[in-house]
Length: 286
Length: 290
Image (tube, rainbow over all chains, first blue to last red; front, side):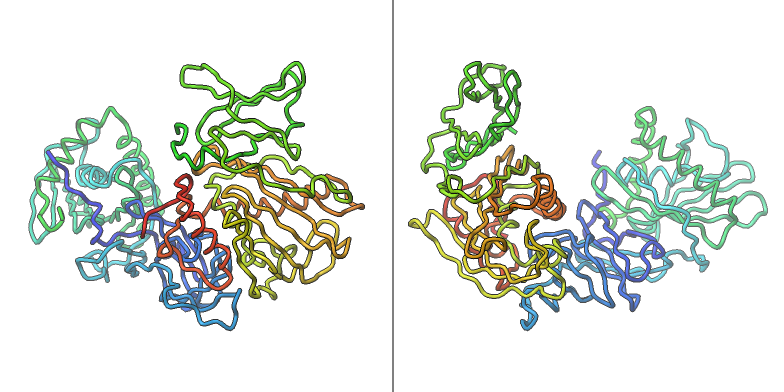
């Protein structure tokens, strides 16, 4: 069956943790095969542009920032936050042509992450990520050689941290899938443990683990399709969490990556991803 | 990549080696326009160059010539002679062969960078330009030899250190000559011999559309520096250019005027792209209209 396409040009995706780009810094990023540059002005404003100077196609991520502008490393063209070229050093008296502008993309910051969209966004920009109301603690960003659809399905069928015990090489195929309010949910219960996950939109999975009467442990994974076969994921813990929890999350994520990339697990993963796709509402299918 | 089918590219002459690099008993495997070739020195001292086909068979390259200390080859029927550079036969200048440097981009990106003045202040800060003097005065662009050559003349730029032979900050006068899509020569005021020109030239060997070997030379007035010192100066500068060129996209040079946004100082680049467009050449060019 045909898999849905998560790499929607109209979806918002997280591309970096806000802390990765302090004031004056530049970061090259890739979203759905598009090479982008993210940078932060001294006034805190974040911008996400095509990583290409409109003059001669030079990568802007190798340039520099000063105050609230970005400068191309090749000919020193200066661009303001709106993408317009404001100064061409070869002709200091010249007002640059209106056509001389970097290609800008919609971007925003929410809950400590930078979000971007490579097309026309079909939803309002994210203003907060989770419904729990807790601040997110960034654990890590990791690149995985697997498509974002499979990564999402895997995260929804296998808890990180000490969730209910797992079967079938770590994957749980006895999930109860559902979809409501435009979101896909997965859930399973074993003994006094409960795991649930929710795909809120193509770039966001929130997970919750409850054991006995303990307070639920929640983590959030933001998915960034870098190409059709590769994804970056940004993992965060709801609330501060302990160093031990962060370290265990990191350990389990490394194992998840290893399993996701192994051929041995591929048939199981394909079944899980198909099951997840079946539940997908049309607006996410695109 | 297989050998190109572009007849215009096939019918050009290309430098494929520096003659003195091919020692007796040694062979050099390389490519030209996607065609694997092997260069060797025969027992009688002559240079040979053969094309290698998919089955490992070989046949001589149809046109081969030694000139200016370089071995030149053409895979087709040359429509023009090898560029005329009488300065190689004149007295007073030193010939510095600057080796072969690979750059993972199209040959046209390399020529366009070579004829560009406005990057000096940012890419060659402290030698060919300074951040305080980035302004590019107006220069002339003209076609010569019935449109067969493109020239940018009376290019003037303030340079902190224009050559290995000088530490003088001064306004330097340049003429750029593009006698073929894959060759460019700078004629630059000598700062040692007033009224004389130094020459710096690039002979490009396109391996593939976006992978190029740069053969280059300098013909300079310099009686004080060693070859090593002069080479060091040029290699530092070319390394800086290379660091820029490998990061330009697309690697093939766009010819449509809608693709990139030029400014006044890009007059030579605009003319070069238009000249390439009119020539009918496909190899190394991005002809997407944008």
